[in-house]
Amino acid sequence: VTSSPAGINCSAGTCSASFNQGTAVTLTASPGAGSTFAGWSGACSGALASTVITLNANASCTATLTAATKTLAVTIAGNGAGTVTSSPAGINCSTGQCSATFVQGTSISLSAAATGGSVFVGWSGACSGSAGTIGVVVNADIACTATFAVGGKTLSVSLAGPGRGTVTSTPAGINCAPGSDQGCSAGFAGGTTVTLAARPAIGSGFVGWSGACAATGQVTAGVTLSTDVACTATFGPGTARPETGWWWNPGESGRGYSIEASDAGGSLHVYFGMYAYTESGAAVWYVATLLLAADGSAFSGTLLRYDGGTGLLDPYRPPADGRAVGKDGRAVQVVFATPGTGTIMLPPPDGVLPETSVAISRFAFVPGGLDTPRPTASGLPEAGWWWNSSRSGQGLFIEVQADSRDTGMVYLAVFHYRLNGAPVWQFGSTGVVQVGGAWYVLGMPLWECAGGPFLGAIGPRRFDCQAAAVGPVTMQFGTNGTQGVVSLNGVDLAIQRFSF
Image 1: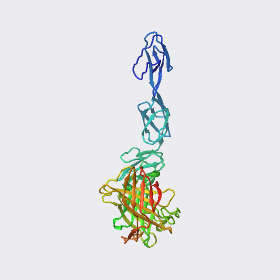
Image 2 (image 1 turned 90 degrees about the vertical axis):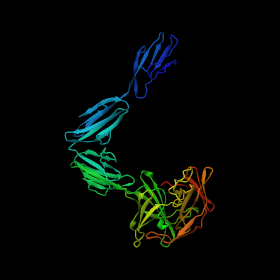
Image 3 (image 1 turned 90 degrees about the horizontal axis):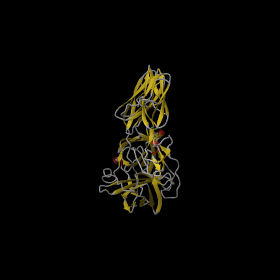
Image 4 (image 1 turned 45 degrees about the vertical axis):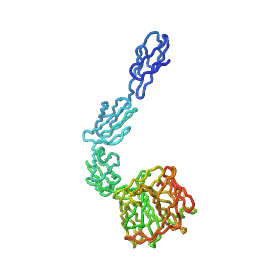
């Protein structure tokens, strides 16, 4: 409550002010959020928010404020029977519709209980879900419907195994999460076919169904509810989320892998690069976008080879569309036992060479590079894939590690093409230095290898690395660590992080 002329300014309790005798004072009541003005009493009267009092004597006025209320209405629907009650009390329905008023903003717990052999099917309207008890906040007048069915059946789902995951249903009703049984049973009309979908958490895999669900090994299972049934979804170990960076097999030196995990688009996937050789020994690279299997067991995708492009700083020519590598469309598959170890199943390139399995681990390219925390100074380049967005089909993979003296070291690979369009890769490593607010790589020599392992090769092969015809490389990175410039043979190219 405030006054004009100024003097009164009350928000609670009692306040007072002095005015010259005979002054006409206007009092205005302004209810706060969730409240309404009920009227004046004492020396003031009326229901309008503003009132005028002339002070010929001392006077006392009271402004009454009440909490705003909203209505919650509940309707009982369906051919079954049941009751709905509320906490705080107010709703108590068994047929038709009932309603109650509550102070605006109140959190209400509604509980549905089937009776007489019926089952509770679910909520609709302003309420949703199939849990017997739900919460709703009454910020406005709202209406909810509780549906009960005669001859309904109950589907119960349990989660088992050392892994973690969730199970949901279509139609809605089942919503099981690790550590909680809430929503793990629901009623459906008799004869309804319910499809259950299991989704393992990252690092877990779906093993299979048991009980009334028989589609073991499939992430979905359908069950027709002619009676009350129970299903169990078992989760076990699955592939881990890999660390972004350089990977290798120490026994196959000369061949390596660049791996970056991303959640872009709402699903976990991996962009995979492989630096290897043809059967004739020429350097070649492959890439693949690896998607996580529905059961969480592995990442897999088509291994692609690109040809026909240009060198990193030559006049740009786009490469031809990627050519799938792998007999009969076989995919490359990667399972990560931990964030830093895994196994690759490489597809056979033809009908003669075999599918090969390669154990891989993170590559520490400086002493203690994986044991020493990565330098976190502002502006250091982020680990992962980089490119110039106007030159699709070529790029770089960059990782910075700290050596045993906590000095930043960068490892770089450039994937591009020879003058004849054949894919080629070069690599190098050196220190990074800070000048002002920017980080620089100065005069990094590039190397190029030949003769190493190819797809289908079993065991190590002798390879030879020599200084590349291009280079050395200078790089500069901006203060945000996601943009930079690479200079090769005196030509500059702007680069940025690749978001795939």
